[in-house]
Amino acid sequence: MGCNVRSEHVDLDAVAAIRRERVDWRFKGLPADVFGATVGEVADRRLDLFADGFVGPLVVLDAAALEHNLVTMERWCAERGVLLAPHGKTTMAPQLFARQLAHGAWGVTAANTSQLRVYRAFGVRRVLLANQLVDPAGLRWLAGELAADPDFEFACWVDSVAAVDRMTEALGTPERPVDVLVELGAPGGRTGARDQATAVAVARAALASPALRLAGVGGYEGALAHDAAVESLSAVDRYLDDLRALAIGIADLFEVDEPIVTAGGSAYFDQVAVKITGEWPFPVRPVLRSGAYITHDDGFYRGISPLGRTPGAEPFRSALRAWAQVTSHPQEDLALLTLGKRDASFDEGLPEPQVVRGRDGVERPLDAEVTALNDQHAFLALRRGEDVEVGDWVALGLSHPCTVFDKWQLIPVVEGTTVVDLVRTYF
Image (cartoon, rainbow, N blue to C red; front, side, top):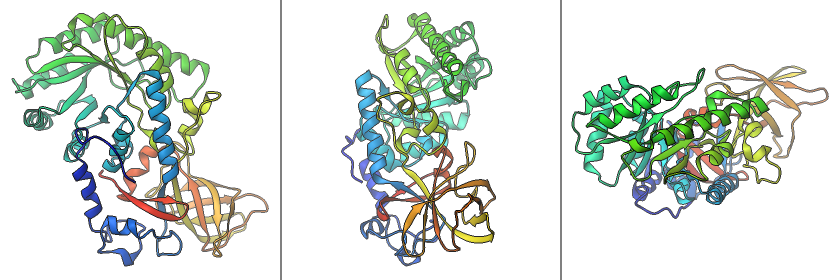
């Protein structure tokens, strides 16, 4: 799983060093006979998921789907003239960050200081922190990073004068000011100034701060809608119009030549791209922050992704799959799988049974439904005429990748059932 990213975007030596980490009992699902080997040595053995000692449950990544999604998003952004700073919190996997950067990503987005520290440990050069940073210890650490590395580019959100004041108090007069973007929210949304007047006041406060530099505007439309209904899409458009109006309204306050205008989760990035590109009365950097595209899913994003609901568009492919064994079949219409809330996402839909693999290695489609998850068990309701046996393996599609990766420190990347790489996460 190589990458051709330029070294100034990320420390390729640090990423490559992941392959030298030793594998042991800390990593779920791996064969016991690889303990003591390095990640790279395990990957190079091209082990088989079912013949070489892996134990369930196990979450894997499909190599072909990952590459398809990376290429598809790179092409899509290039065609629309929009930059991409994918939200790294989805995977917290520097190997995948490197591949995203190799496929044209402009930077990587973080949500908090701990995530930012991971990014910096792997030399990520350009980071948006899509949140306010008001913790004094975090700000002092950030100021040190900026002072030590003149190539490090960083910006975070501010949505109140109080936040500007707290940042200024903590930073004093730093060697390099911290770039901030005024965050615009919406009633009922998440963070962000709730109206234009408040946002303008925040911008003026940032301009007056000796510790900060006003570098753009940002927001997040995904909290305002959760489906593709007409009223939901209209709400997103109205919000993006307001964000654009804010940027134009404070144009004379920006302290950079090309202010950043950024929004965009993984559900409505098509609308975001339309609104933040196009004609502007001054140069801007339009930046999307979609993160889940790299793996997509078999649930929430499959149902709402712009590329899935746009006729003629090449959709993303789900790269996530979980394998779990049938551990009990206590009644005709119910089986229990060795997979639970400790292993798979459940906040935006339960795992989707797709395939059953018998002990003879033969796979076939499975007509069943996961109706509930306990900590370590999935309740598999079997349709009429369907059956499984204790010991069978069941493949499940997963919804909402953001709450899958945090449960796995080392994830096999597969071609079919052959492991071709291992992805390390840092949560």
